[in-house]
Length: 75
Image 1 (cartoon, rainbow, N blue to C red):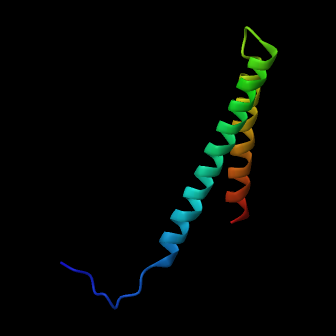
Image 2: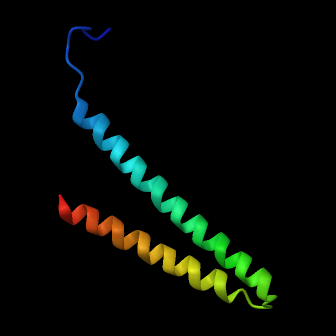
């Protein structure tokens, strides 16, 4: 069965998909950037225990979750 080509497309579904996929990409990018920065700091300081990697990755996760929750409560 083919859909009627004259039927309007529900733009709210595609808009929500783009919004949430953009939020997921932003979260992933933030977490990866902070973790990579922590890794490079540990490498530069020659730490045996990856302190900066752990700290910055946890901070980035907390910040991403904070921004996610804040964006949901605005709606």
